[in-house]
Length: 496
Image 1 (cartoon, helix red, strand yellow):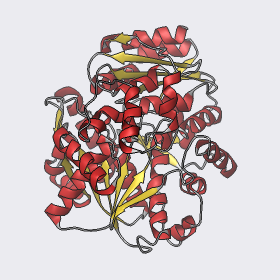
Image 2 (cartoon, one colour):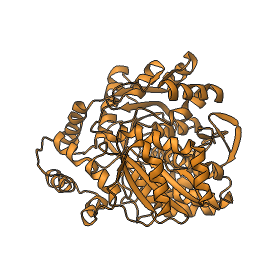
Image 3 (cartoon, rainbow, N blue to C red):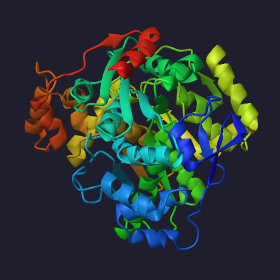
C-alpha cells in the first residue's frame, strides 16, 4: 500500500514512511492511494472476532510493510485488559430503540483518543526501524484537551521517542489539565500556551514547516513527528471502532446484516468523523454522517454552505475538545471529494493560511451535502441535554456527547429520518465534572479532583479508576509560553 500527499500526489510513501514522517514536507496529509474493501463476507467474518482481531484484520490491509505477527502483537498490547476497563474495549450502549452510544472512553485516559494513541507508539517505533531512521523521534502535540493526555500516556517511556504537548492555558477542564501536568515518564513534557487551541495548533504546524529548525534538530539527532490525527497512523485505528460497533449491533440483534445506519459524531478537528467516512467508503453500510459542533460552528457552516471561514469569534465552551476553528482533517475529505485533485486542495489550504477562508466549488459541495448533515449546540442546550438524559435514562453524558445527542435529535426532527444511529460518546462525564454537576442542578464550591467524589455521590455512578488515582499525583509541569516562543520550548526540551 502506497500513500500520497493531499497537496502533491506525485509524492509516494510506504505506510511506514507515512507514519514516521507524520506530515508531508509540502504541508499535505498522507492518504492511501486506494481504500481497501469490506465486500463479500468481511462483516460476517469480523462479527466472530474480538476487538483486537478486528483491528488486525482492518489495519493489516493498509500496513503491507508490517507482518501479521507484528500487527497482532501491537493490537494485543494496545487493547489489553490492563489498559481498558471493559472487555469489549469499545462497547455499544443502547439508550433507546434506534439510538446506540459507542463508548470510546474505557481506556487509560478516559477519552476516545486512547483508541488510536495506544496503538500509534507501536506503529511509529516500528516504522522508524523499517525506514532505517537513526534519529530519535520528537513527538509534538497540540491538544484541545484529550489528545495530549492520551499521547503522553501512549508514548510514556517508549524507546527512541520524546513527546512534548502544548495545550491552551485556559481552554481545558481542570481534570484534563491535571491529567497532563501530572504525567510521569522520563521522555515527556507539557507546556501551556497563551491563547486558544488554534494558536497552539498553528504554532506546532509552524515548527513542522520551519526547515532551519528541522535541520538544527536533525543535526542534534532528532526528527519531528506528530501524534495528532494528521498522522495516518493515528487515523487508521479509528476506522476500526466503527466497523466493530456495526458488528456488535448485529450480534446483539439491534440491526440486521447489511442494514444501513447513520453515525453522529461530535467533532472539532474532523478526524473522528473522517474515520467514519473512510469506513463508509470501504463498504460499511453507513448512510448519513451527522457532524455535531458546539458554538464554534465553523464545520456546520461549511457543510451547509460550502464556505470555510475561520475569521469569526472564538468561544470557550463546556465542550473544550471541540473549541477549534481550523479543522485539519477536512483537507483529507476535500481531497477525496475532489477526485484527488491535489492542486485544488493546495489552493484551498493556501487561501485558508493567507486569508482565513475558502469557498469550495458546487460539485464538491453537492457531494459533501449528499453524505454529511451538520448542526450545532450551545452551552445552555448542552446542559439541558445532559440533565434530560440523566433524568430519563439514568445515563450520564459528557458535554461533547451531549452536543452530538442534541444535533441528532434536531436532524431527526428536521428530516424525519429515524434510521438506527450510532452516537459517538467521546469522553467519560467524569472528565468534565463541573459542567455535568452544574447541568444536574448541583451547586458546589469544590474544585478539581474533589468534584469527582461529588458527582459519584450525587449519581451513584462509579468514576473511572484512572481519574480517581489523580489524587495521588503531583503536578510536574507548570510552564506557559506564547505561541511565538514554542520553538524555543522545543529546543529547551530536547537539550534536557
